[in-house]
Image (cartoon, rainbow, N blue to C red; front, side, top):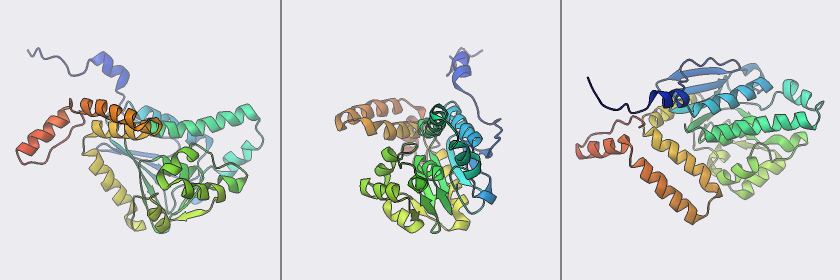
Length: 286
């Protein structure tokens, strides 16, 4: 009988490992295939708007993904020819004008919590953006780690068009870090649409692909990431997010500690042994 100590105590695993394989989505499509989870907003007849229910389910799902070791990468997509038109005019905007401050704050905190959950989950998020990407849809794209677009993409942070400030769901903090302060200011003050080619030039999109190839390209990128050192990728995502609030000296020390932890992983050893053997490493995320 083997006396080898289990790599992870079952009691510890029970509270911190919750596979997502059995998850059943209610307000969007969900698919999990070989470590790649695909979330598809699925109201194409309305350009995939969000509702109170879909906001809450997305927030809760991304919060759960930090425990899901069977999910390595997430792809965010929209059904049909559009990504997401933002909050549903009839199911969200209409009800909001009748609410009082406590309920309005409940809503805005819920939407902000979705972004915090997206940034807090360790899995890289790849957004596949075609057609309309507006309002909260633009925020979801912004909160993703990588963005693939098309030439016909139209991204608009259109909050001022409906009488609201551009400071929504972290936009004033995150968007300038992606496209720069001046360009972010233009988008948030005017609410105008950012076309696909312009978005690629500005750095909002990592690259553009043909509309008919968008889903396949996003899936291929996700598979490449899923085949990589996923524990280390999670550390990279954490540091990219946390270092926004650090000085250079603090960031260098934090990265020294983070990298030392990654050097303890079996993936690091596998990479070295594969290099010595002149082979491609097979990472397992541990």
